[in-house]
Length: 373
Image (cartoon, rainbow, N blue to C red; front, side, top):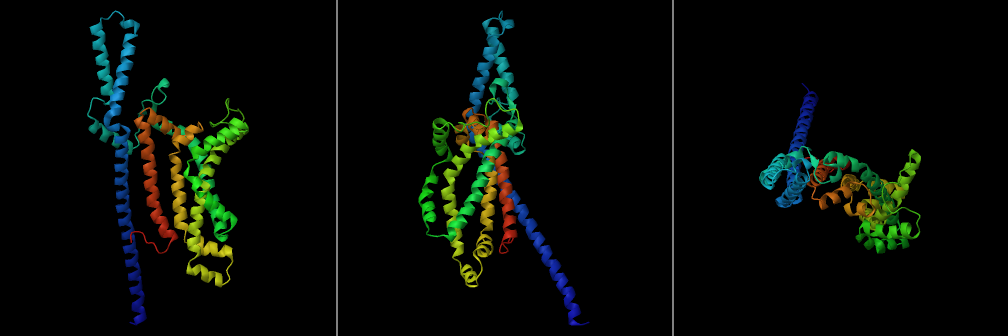
């Protein structure tokens, strides 16, 4: 048998062995990484449960509210008017005991915290006890789903617009290093240290209070237009000021950061070699500047997308925007633990999944990266 005939099966065996080792490495990495991220989520959610309950102090507040509510109900009940003071007191204590047992408040907080953790991880978020107290308790998932579209609309448009605008302007400034516009963005970059709600207050005072050309806040005019077109136009008008505030608060620092990042890559030796070969500026940017920075760009974009879930509590409160951030702000003020934990656990899952996917995306975008290596 010739050496060539022997070499062909040997290559097939080596190829199969390489595929098996690669698959085993990826499977092992997936399991280890998944378990590690899940443990991290558990720790983060449990700490949120402890902080949101203030170590059990919120239970004492809830017990006080239960006692006050039941006492008022018994004392103001006409059917119980003929009962003596001792009988009323005994009835009140019995009702309080039954209500605390129903809510699990008669158990130690440590036991209840682990039960709360289990319910949170399985997304059995239960009911919000304090939100919308005039109409009773509501399921947490309904509260979050009700507020989610408004947050996605505002921050989705603002963040994605800001992200791509920053990249576009940064590429232009990296080609015009030292120009007037480049120096202007560098000088104005410290203005991004102020949060969006800070600029929002001034924009409201100017365009809503002084010029009276834009609304002060909220999602839509009151009463809401009946026509879909007019409703959409009303929502668009209410979006102008929040998007302006978010853009002004972040655009200069974002452009400055990306511009500096692109300048670092544009000074590499292979970029100088491409320029010496006579490649156009567009081709150099596409092949030798943007492509090596794709992992960083994708990371920033995905983290921007999942950050939409949290909203911005103070920002949405300033603009009276009915989103998740405002719901979280109200929940913190009212010690509404289910809403706080529910919002946190869903964001934790989104963040863990995003981090896991980024490792795989890095391996696809950058041939130097191997999953599980």
